[in-house]
Length: 364
Ligand code: SF4
Image 1 (cartoon, rainbow, N blue to C red):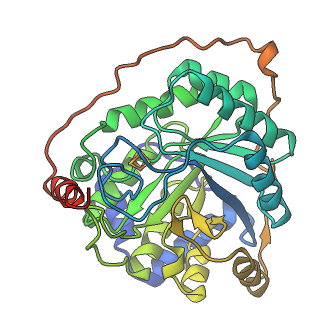
Image 2 (cartoon, rainbow, N blue to C red):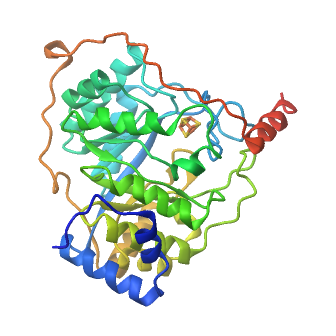
């Protein structure tokens, strides 16, 4: 086994990222084999349980209410709707359901209680449950853990420096504090980011410094390639080159050997050969399902055909960690505290976000 280091510097990560491709691939594939079965891939299904109408200004996101996109918003799904979708995901080989809600942060109340019930329901289907609901307090994280949550997703998105060029309504430290709150429970952490937002290679390395120096490192790290959606501030960004994706995956694998590295948004833009190279470079997880929250994703059958072709098998649930116990709401140790945490609002001006907002006004 190679050691898990928490002291990576940007220079060291850049040196890895910029290695000749064949050396980079060989090193990443070697580390991958020391820590994981290279023929196993973990499959998650992402489910948008509440879509659109979000108050934030994330420059890549079609769900931000302030931009004009073709997203159809939806109120919070019912527990039964979620259960039906989870069963379908289980039948098609997913071991995990990740529920995403377009919220700035979790608020105590009926809707959060409903999400907790969704967590209980899916855990009882013997599937891993993940949530991505925005910022959470320690008490909220504990309530999620008690309901049977397996993982919480909260992406760092980019380096701290470049994050300021993409989002102005919440700060980087809020992201880190949320991860810290999740770490006070036994819920695993899923955190990664997006490439192709106009950042430079130093920013990609900066994001990996922020992730790899967390202790413990995240159990899973999604590497998204931007899907540039019309109406968002990043609509004109060019698609990510497959070689950039491979370099990013390989570098992530080397600096975070134990982490499950997940191919996420942008897979429709990648050929099977490109995806196979990413698996060789150390990716060992994907999001399945025809949609990733709101952007397109390869068909599940296509993914299964690809796995067959590559001789890869979906990972069984709870392979890496035992299934959490679900505590029923009536027996809960934790109460809703009605907290009003002061998550920050830096509110600096990002020109392209302002321009997209102005453009949206013309449609109203
Ligand atoms: S990424 Fe999340 S927080 Fe940001 S606008 Fe989209 S839904 Fe809202």
